[in-house]
Structure formats: structure tokens, C-alpha cells
Image 1 (cartoon, rainbow over the protein chains, first blue to last red):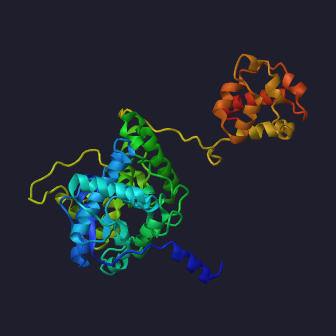
Image 2 (cartoon, rainbow over the protein chains, first blue to last red; image 1 turned 135 degrees about the vertical axis):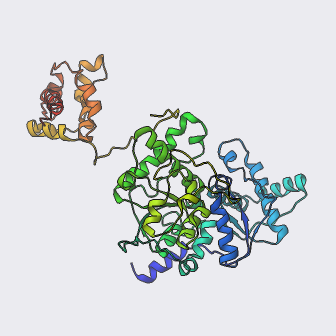
Image 3 (cartoon, each protein chain N blue to C red; image 1 turned 180 degrees about the horizontal axis):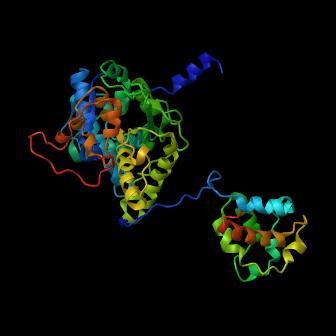
Length: 353
Length: 114
């Protein structure tokens, strides 16, 4: 294929990411399991890069987990999302920055439904007005927070202190990137690189000096899948998906997994503990686990922030072996010290601890 | 081992990298006519054992070629070696010998002789 042709086709896989003024909406899972990530994202955009990012305290859950579990009807979730849009409209924001891939998929699905079935938009306007007396505009762009970090990856690279390079050998660190299914598999045009070549996390890793591994089950789902974990007896389905991925990536010896979906980050991390307990198997080198990080945690680490402020210690698989390779200094004694100076209880049964 | 109330599930994909095809190799070496099989199922249709059990030489043939030996091991001992399958085979495969060799291969495999 000619080079120009390649470039033209690749243009079709791009997503327009605005430069400034974001209306930020949080993720239920990320706030609970790794709150440091969202905190650092705001700090990164607001303080490091000087961007305008607004967070409304009246914002609620998108009810996505309830929707995917058949508890919340589609009309209800449309009205809940419309209320979020109304909050953005009130404040004059046109670009929604969504922290969760599930919410991101929900917002996409709803906006696309309104586009193809305008009567549903009118109905939602009516429901929202009857319930809250609010009115809204459909946002100009639906953004995921990984899109924003992708957009500013080179600015982050210019502030980088500890690149993704083994400081003892000078070799780039091998990384697995895992894109959440609802990021680009449902509506490919909303993701950078579409469903076939999602480039969001690849771009970050390569820009920060790492090497991305291409392994057979790279695009396999992590198994989060809502219905697969809601009932305890079914969780084997979810775990088996992650296990399949780990078995496939194991021979390539990845140093860490980078995921952009809260569910993937949580499950690929916690299932490693479960598999270790059940089968005595770990997938990293030297019997270690593979740390699963969020893109903000990784951005913070390469920029030289204190790993404990970023919250990397709140994963089941600990990141010390990775930080040792990158040459990041850390104080083990301060790992579980709260902001007020009190000592928090250290979690048990951690991997790599 | 901790009981979480669930466990991982073995994937049902045919993994040619991990499956063991030594039993098939042993049969092919000693009964090359097995390669002539066209999978018509005549053997399974006339099988005396299939009347009372789930024995099927056609199924065994496919499983051996995939290297999925656990199921073959379960099925193979159901054969009574009556030889009707050999009589009906349109390709002249010595199916009775295939059964015999499969049983033999498993015995050798258990004794690390294959």
C-alpha cells in the first residue's frame, strides 16, 4: 500500500480531542478502588498543564452497572445521563470528560440512540423537565479521560523523570496494554484508533519509552462483563477470561499491564490474587505477579510523583519490582501513612509485597 | 486452597500447541490405512457397542486428530472388537486394528513407552 493511502486511512481512525475546558464526571469503581488516579488526573490537567477542568458536586452515578444488569430501564438511564448533560449545559461546558469506560459506553450509546431515533431525545427532554425542570444540550464531544492523557502524552513526556526504561540495562520495559471493550468495541469512531487499532494506551507507553507487547489474546475481554461477576457462583467465567489473557501474555514477560477501564484494572489485578490462592500460579517473572496500573498512575510515576500519593499501593499486585526497575525511589515505611499522619492498616495477602 | 465459591473454567478451544498427538502418531505409524478415512461414519452407524453406549469410532477419529485424548480414553474401552466397522468401511481402513492400537498406545503412554 502507498504511504499516502495509509495516512489517509489512518486519519479515519482519529478522534478529535479538545484542548481545554472539560466537564469531568467520575467513575464509581475508580473512586472506591483507586481514588488516587482521579485525584492525580485533576492535578495533572489543572495544575501541571493549566487546563480548565470542572467537576460538579451534584453529579451522580450513570447507573451503568444497573443498566447492564437489567435493573435500570433504558429510559431511566437516558434521563439520568440527560441530567448530567444539563449540569454541563448550566455551567457552559460542551465537552464531557468521562472517567469510566462503562459510563463512556453508556454516554456513547445514548447519544447515538438520540441521533438515530430523535423521538427518544424529545421523550428524554420531557422526562427530565417533568422530574427536575432542567434543560440540556447534547455535548459536542464525548471524551474518555485516557483520551485526554493521550492528547497530552508528549507534554507529560517532556516533564518525565523516570522513563519506562530499565535503568540498570537501558532496555525499554515491556508492557501489556489493555483497552476496555466499551471504549472502542461498541462504537469504534469514539476511540482513538477505532476497534481494530486502539492507540490510546500504545501511544502513552511508546511516548514514555516503553515497548508494547503484541500477544495472541491482546484484544480479549478481561471478563468484567457485569453479569459474569454479579452472582458469586458465576465469577469463574469472569476469572477464566483474565486467566486466558495472563496465560497468553506470560511467555512475553511483561513488566506491567496498563488498562484504561476501571473494571479491567480492578479485575486483572484482583483475579491474580484469586488465581494464586486457588491454583498457586502467578504470571510474572520469578514467581511475581504483574502489576496492573491506570494511565494516571503510570503518568504520575514517570513524572516522579510519590507513588504512595498516586495510590499504587492499593492494588493486590504491588508495583515495587516495576519501580525498582525504573529507578523510582520510595519509602516503604510511608506506604500506609494517611494524609493526617495516622497509620492505616496494611492489607494482607498482597502479591509482590 | 481457599474456597471462593467459584473456580476457573477450562476453555473449550482446541489448542493444537498444547494437545498431545502422540497416540495418533503411534496409530499412523502402525496402521497407515487410518489416513484414508473420509469420516463417512459407516463405522459408527454399524457399531454394536454404540447400541448400548456412546461409543463412536468417527468421534474417536476426530478427537485423536485434535489430540484430545481424555475423551478417547473413556470411549475406547467400550469397543467389543466385533469388527463390523472394518467390514463396512468404504476406504478399507483396518478400524479394528485402529481400536487395538489406540488401547495399546494408552498403555504405553502410561508406562512412558511412546
